[in-house]
Length: 470
Image 1 (cartoon, rainbow, N blue to C red):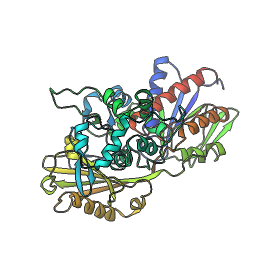
Image 2: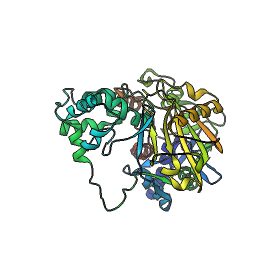
Image 3: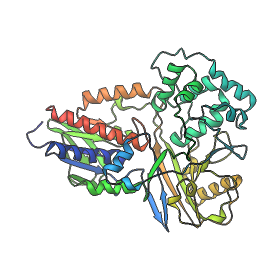
Image 4: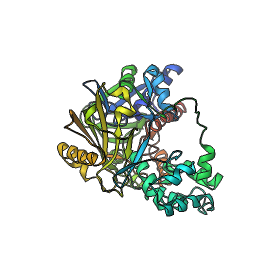
């Protein structure tokens, strides 16, 4: 490394890159280190998939709408930014699964579809008597004989334990909203490794989930498990940008190529002067990293087709939306003849987002094997969504306004074997591109807390790499 101050470039201004920039700046201040840090973003705005629309008193999320409280890093970041008073829990309420054009409540006590209370499961109409008997066989089935650590699909794991009906009618629609993928090809060890551990420790998933489920107080209404910010998630992005006083932020400069040199790395842009770097945090989709590093064979992904999805926001007068059931929304199994995959009654789940007397609905379209709708014109997507919704509950009149947001190739599909691929990828990067660290939703989780954790780890990796005289 040269005698000049270390130069770090963070590529990507989504929440992963922003978290890396924020916490790197914090560490440099704490350690009194004078480093040159640059954040590159190809578009003219920061935040990546976090995008909040504020209109007519509505606060509407066009990407993710919240994060799990139990994953601490997102709430901690909000507090570090001085936004603790802005955090708000979701309002709890019944969630439903659409089955044969009827909204059926998710059985009480079910955790990711695994029943922990047998009576509600016994009386649900979502699963046939034969399907219930098959699911309860989990109480007696032996552990898997699969070698420890060997990967398998989410679908094959849960089908073996609980049977096809519970998987297709409960587990699949619940997971579709998270991954938009085919659970029979998605990696268990990269998405839900805790269930493999539960089987290993307890044998039965039902017994394990029942044992591990925290006791619920009957003294008060349970608190929601999700958090967001009163003014929208983008207020967190704005706070980071405002506080990056020692980071040079460059927007609207797409990355063209990364070249390894005797002095570190040369970063060429599609406009503007090239940048020199001693370490790089690549917080961009893997396809971008692969392209700018020259499409080397070791960068070949296991699954090269991220799924495209779209969110559709519809605002109505409250009396135009006739909800016959109390709750927060519903999900739809892929076996049902609908285009929408889920619908959130946002004015019920997040009351602070909606003015009095109004209703706000957020629907989702697109999933693995069913992405064509995402490419349709806005008005056609809205028509399809309205037609599907009206099959479930009465909606009178036209929406006051709508907003369609497409996320093309946005949902990474962690295929079976992803962890082994990732381990090999990191080893190859360390050997061929020392000081270049790959983070983001392509690698180790796509939720906001997962991305923040990766950004924080990248900071530790860069500090270690450059402090050791690389």
